[in-house]
Length: 200
Picture 1 (cartoon, rainbow, N blue to C red):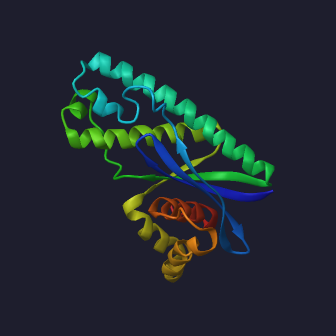
Picture 2: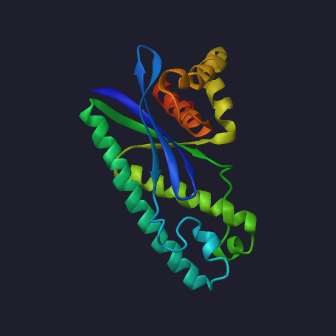
Picture 3: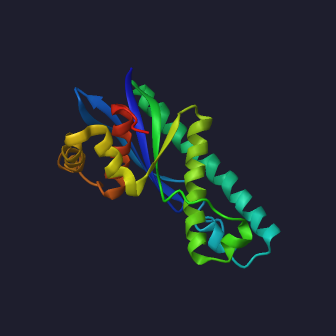
């Protein structure tokens, strides 16, 4: 089987997944998917912290716990399907890269709910955790890459070739078509970095 790595860029309630393999030293995209990890018909799932902003703490905790369990279950099912499909095509996923925000540690729930900025931060972490936990339950090791430091990490790994690698991944759109947005490009770069040798 050929080794592959997955990169994921997360949004509220969904994420973009890109699987990359090595084709004679060149990154080859072997899968890309938009994975929804919420039930869009259920109240308060897409922005769970916004939804509980005015709740009492206990009620907020209950809602967040329920949403976390549901999102993790959906993430695991979706990722399991991707891994199965890739194995059927002779690819084994050895690792996963998840793009992170600043990595700032969050305060207690009451303090989060008192700050609109922290609510946004908490929601980002909430869905990243759902993906991370799902991958780890499926025995796929996860590495976090801070998104704003991705270019720096690429330069540390690839040296003078870093700009060429980034351009090569950006240019993949010419051969694989759309969608090939910043989501797919960043996820692919992080996955390719894992395949090429994790700089962290």
